[in-house]
Image (tube, rainbow, N blue to C red; front, side):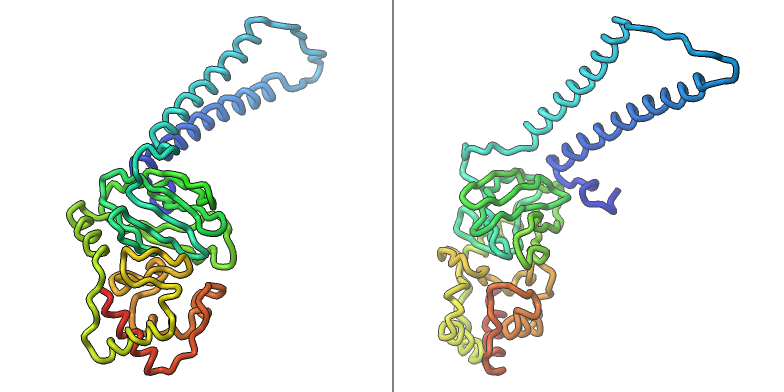
Length: 309
Ligand code: CUA
């Protein structure tokens, strides 16, 4: 059922949840068929007929009472056991027993990802495929909910109460995620992607993300870098990994190497220009005000951002 990502699990955790759901569904369907079959049979078999008189009455049957108490009890007990087993497999320990492989923080309305080596990125999270990563989910403002339907497990990001999930993908691919808890105007725009890569490619990506992009060499890009400082872009956006997050706007480190808005907007010069001049037209309500900057300055800023590979 690939038309619905929830039924197309792509991680051991999501597979376990989908299997549990299917087992419940099948068992419930079987019970439904048996019960409704008996009801229909009784309706037909014992319906009122002419000259049939009152039907015979039976009072009390210990054997029947025990049977219809024990059978549902066994069914509920079996469901309880498989549920607890699935939870034990799927849920990460909520006490920090080991340092997390990744810290994800929900902001209105973007996701920040921090790696132990200091690399920081936004709305595009990389993980090694086939490896279980312990992810700490946090929120910087209101309650968000980190959800990748194909990878599970869905987890609320609650301010002041970090939670942990296992994040794993069976195969290298890009998986789409979304915020799943209403968190304000751009809740629906709080999308992200998880890029699962083969381990060597992931290590290379992580190493590169940690590096600070070299200073630009082109005249226009140098001018753009100066504008970036003069216009106080850095008050909200960090440029190099390792800098403490401002918490206000997504990091722009290696921005040229990833998609915009969690991959929803192609990273082209046109879109970067549009975003700088009129972010409110693309993502109304977001914290970045429209910038009233001269066209050639915008051009220089875009030129500079493009160097942040
Ligand atoms: Cu964040 Cu909805």
